[in-house]
Length: 460
Image (cartoon, rainbow, N blue to C red):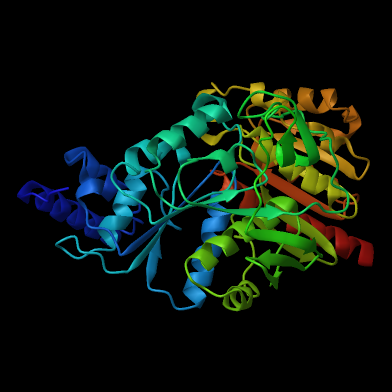
């Protein structure tokens, strides 16, 4: 797009606004871009781009994948910028372009890595053509935004430009079919011990062949619609992957990387985190990094502390675990991770959507798509539901088969840590919405204080 004198005036105003915000101690990761787009609707399209643009999207895992990619690039000395500390919607992308350019708009770095909210693709991708695009998966999400995954699939198909090379999840039959005419590379986890043909999840968004509607024959279904299948009617099947995890241990994974056998360290062996690590590896390899370089960098990287963090005292743990309110698939993955975690567990549930809870208009239907049944396991000794919708969560837990004596619930989140029966669990999980990290961190601190007091009392 042509850059007019008016565009340069808007860029000057946006840069000046950013500088003033920084002087006031604000992070300036969203408002300068929002202002620029308000003044010039096509601002992103007119703004010069770096030599290479990489975009990462998908329903779940895009932030973790983006963080892993950015950490590896940082450790290998790449000249790049990213929106790790900013917004993944159009205003955040515009702010990032502003902050990484000179006063004439020329980029100061050669590579940009953007995490993109899938619902913002219509406001970004028509104005910014990626050189490489990764999609982690496609699931149902918040009912008010994108509950129907086929809607998101159609949305991305419409706005991702033709010809952009794609990196896709081969074990997700919706994701793997994204932009069928574009060049594509796939990643996959081969069938592992314990993988079967059925799934115990409530939600299954690919009940039939995405191509003809025929019956699917599953080699295995890992969870929800993640697995590998072939259509009995038309032969449509999960694609073969260029990047495939072949073996998993607790601390690393063996992968086939375009015909080469390689090993990579793992920060966490839960399947969702294996997929995230593999997606990051595939993208980095496609950018030209060697598997050896990637493995070396991953060895010093863990999962982002805003997604998962353990703190230990006297052999007992308080664990922060993102659950993403109103996202039944993300919550189900968290619940299953808790069930499979060793020892006795207590769980504090902060599942209210932060913004909806302020106006008490949250849609609770998603609670009945989430697999609360995983929390009815005998190893879960206490569940604490705190927040505006605590009665709804309490009812859902009862319907999932959790005994009432194991459940405490309250409207005030401040009382959650105090309700913990500290003598029982080996680990305390704190599940929280993406916008309530401060609440979760404060609760973790209070939980740790109580666990330490319990340990001191037992020592006496």
